[in-house]
Image (cartoon, rainbow, N blue to C red; front, side, top):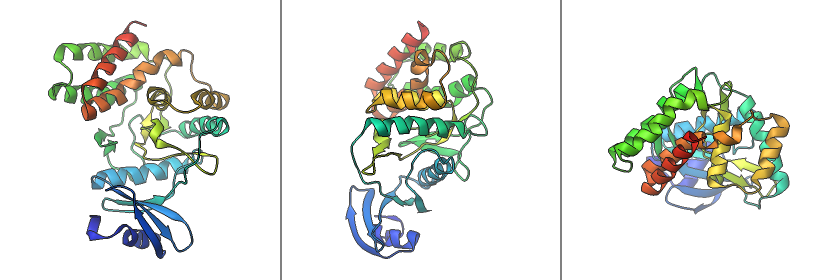
Length: 288
């Protein structure tokens, strides 16, 4: 059930101020609701209050950059979040090129520090269903190791997904990050969970971003996640990005460094297969 035992339609009416004409469940946590002005909205029940707050704050923060397209967040109350519904279309090279330019603009909007939470967002946030702490740091290599890689490595070891000897490989990578990380960059405004499933190719011919784990980070991390899980017309995304804000020399050699965070999150959530991928990625990065 939804918070306050509300139906999705009742929640949408309360948070948008419009009358509902139709509602359709999409899953146990999602419902599509049609309003009396013809718009469709999504009603989502998050797993926790902090998860809902983090997503709502992240959507607002990304929208404020005036770069990428994100659904408008109409309201959040408890675990309920109501956003515009994006009508699905098909990927195109033109939309991918535009997405690349938009991502560059988003990253250039910046953040106060590495690990900064969106304004109004909680320190104890989430990436997917995994907890993600937003702790600020001044230097990316140290911050990334301490607050994005090692917490999930320790959890994976505690769960028995990664053995202590295997963990030493990733710990060595963390120790060498100051040398391997490339030129220093200012904190970027990240989507933070930019796998292909969070890129919606709209019926309007544009790419839209959903379900952010937004925070201040290194811009190469968003791009590394697109590489990790695949993205239609990724070459065009990168071409659009570099036409707006070129990446630092050697960025392609650093993709594995930035993939350690999402790989370890997935190892914690989904098990040994992702742990093995994290270990092979760490070994490859150390050999460069």
